[in-house]
Amino acid sequence: MSYERNRQEALSCQTPDAALEAFRQESFHVPILPLPKEDVKKVEDVLWAPQPKIDLSNSERNNSLKIDPSFTEVSTFSPEEIPRVREKVIKSEGVKDTVYKDSRGIATIGVGFNLEQPGAREAIEYLGADYEQILAGKASLSEKQIKTLNDISLANAMMQAEEIYPNMAKLPFHKRAVIVDLAYNLGGDKLDNEFVDFSAAIRKGNTKQAANELVGTPYARQVGARAQDNIKALKE
Image (cartoon, rainbow, N blue to C red):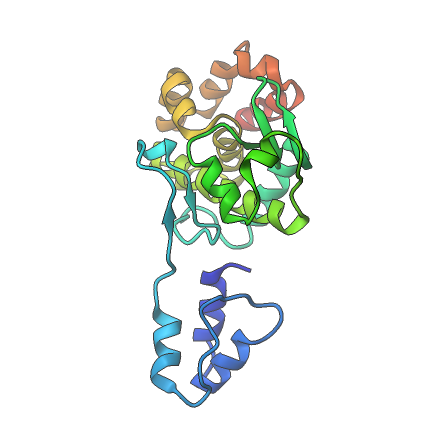
């Protein structure tokens, strides 16, 4: 469960004592707790404190990989929708705990995490893993590490998609999910800069035209059924 969901759950409690008890439940994970139960001021500081973020790169906006798996900056997806987007991406990407080459020959791990992108080393080291060992195929990621990496990647893809397409909120869920799947697979920078006609059509709200712009592209040829499913969803 994300930090923001934890915070909202705690804020719904009637007293600081009840809030602390909520945070201490096994289903919650907030690394900045434990605080004295009787210290009301500190409890309030925790509940309203902004979640820290780590910017892993000084590069341009869509090339910047941020460790922010809480989805607190994602405004067009509800907490109920995010797991459905995750399920779509996992179904498309698959899951692998050791390095492999994707359809473009890029070193990849987990749920389609690009090990060659800016910030990848920092992200792997953030998990407590050895980047060089992972890249060489001499080490693997645990289930928990894969999930955290997927959270990071999915949050970035969602934020990138929203930044590129300001009208995202006006689209139905299944079409927003397609756009996130594209950002996750291609990277926001490539989606924006190399799929110019597709992006123009999305910004106009013409998703059928956007779907047609994907037909026959290297992307469609490389990912096959995944692309066909996305094209179909955009035309619906």
